[in-house]
Length: 401
Image (tube, rainbow, N blue to C red):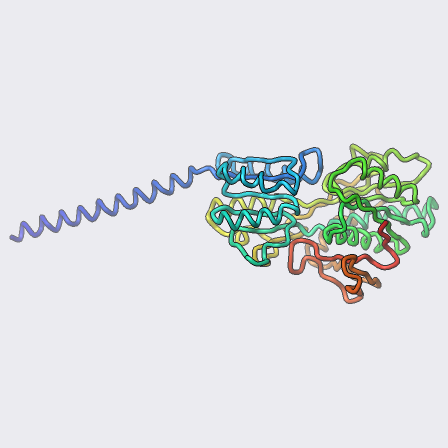
């Protein structure tokens, strides 16, 4: 009997060992299967690589392909009008994408609607403002770089050039006039050109600015025409928040007898406007987008993986996390000392030492004349959201035509 009990015990022990081994084998088999799985990542673009705005996102897409080689499959939809986002989103869903990036503000409503319909897919909306609005969805996220920081530094560069022109007797302080080509009167655009202007004013206190809207993100001829009109009105520096090289070309084609310089956005225009381009700034989308892919691959929340300021399902950052970058400086046109000044300002932003929206200014919300602001008390941009919130036209110093 004792022998039989031992045999039964051994058989039971062996059976248990086999069950445990099978379980471990299955576990590792599943891990190997998951490790070999390819994540399908979709991108919806409002333009194509011809425009700097879309091209910056494509750089992030390429960084994903390089960093996660063999782990991801990229599916892109270019030149999708914001009103046609639903169709492109459905195509990416049907293609099996588990992570979808929508890269223009106008896709926000469609992207959130699809996120609610497909909770197993992660949707990341660039420049959006609705992630923390009801319904709040675990799979819908918004993100944007704190570009006002780059705009401000670009404005300082422009102000240094204006000051040089004044000191050299090429213009008077009263002629320190800036022209700005904006796409739409959105907070994103208003915040950007105000930060730029305040950067200019930190160096040249007599500067004023005129803004013209195109009511389009991408209209080369209209952007160029607006810039030409601003130049004819006496603007000596032109900048923009629109997506084509039209304003840069307008500056470069201006008769050499008239002083005019140019500050870009999203991409350097040194090749298009070599004798007038000064510098520019852009959002670097790589930190967020590569981090989002890493989060999905590892089964973690995006906001727990990507470094930045988290507000619910919204995430943003500036120079401190590499989300904002300055474009190349044209030493041929920029004022002496520009490069050192830019490097110093970047370090100060990284340490949180610069308050941009502050000074002896008042402003009015163009959508609500009863909403006014006094900047003597300051305004902290991106305090509660990654998308810009400053939406006031500064009295007496900024004119919108």
